[in-house]
Amino acid sequence: MGDQAARRAGALHRGIRRRGSIAGEDLWVAATALAEGATLVSHDKVFRPLVDLGEELSGRRYEGGDEATQRALRILADHGRGMTFLVAEGVAPSNEGRGYVLRRLIRRAVVQARRIGLEDVYRLPAIVVEQVGQWYPEVVEHAAEIERVVRAEEERFRETLERGT
Figure (cartoon, rainbow, N blue to C red):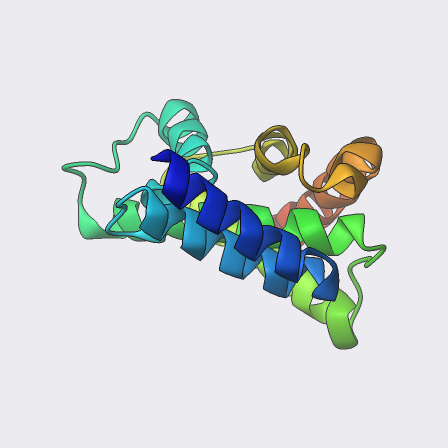
């Protein structure tokens, strides 16, 4: 990213950071991706490491891969980021409100991961923490809790899938 693009993205980021981390992060990711010349948001420096982890754990490739694999990896990257910020903001999986959104993000990520032979969705937030921690210290502060919450919901959902109920 050029100096001017970095300054513009940084200014945008500073202006939106405290207006809600999820909405702000969406804009930050999009601005960074565009400034870096990405054609898809999944190609930027925050999403790409999540896609890379998905590739490594599943043995599948995004570039040149089939459409189902590409879709699953994009969903995993997007949902990994979303679940990280929701838990960092104190949201717990539940059947109501933001907790329901978090539960659906985790469960959809688990379903997509299974489609490409991937286990351990709970590992995704660690990559997000690593990538955005310098701008969002709350994700670093809550990293252990984020992993615990995601892992627990993932395990509950896997048990449900195995029981068939």
